[in-house]
Figure 1 (cartoon, helix red, strand yellow):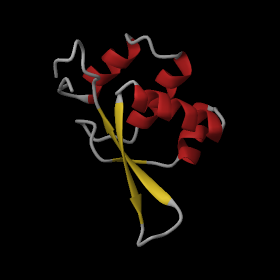
Figure 2 (figure 1 turned 120 degrees about the horizontal axis):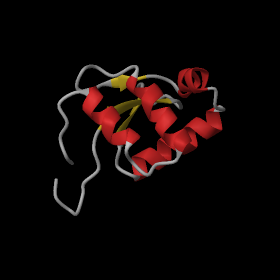
Figure 3 (figure 1 turned 135 degrees about the vertical axis):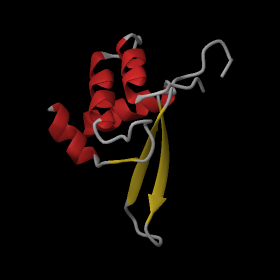
Figure 4 (figure 1 turned 90 degrees about the horizontal axis):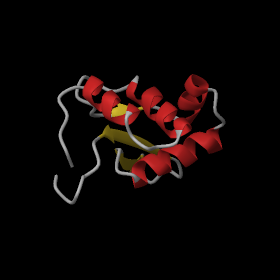
Length: 100
């Protein structure tokens, strides 16, 4: 994983990526909830849908695409065996040419 100094650096990378426009939109909305270095991002799919104007299924699709492209890492947490999980997101740059 390549490092970035601030979320603004990450924004620049996302904006220059070949990701679909809706995937970039979801990533930018996700970053609204990030700290300065892109860690510990907690927000719901519903909130992201509200912020982007996309449907919840569309947001889920684009979060999966972003995770597959290595722009985010997702930690899934369940509360004491609850059926519902909460996701924690980490903003990251994908590896380029196999070099972190």
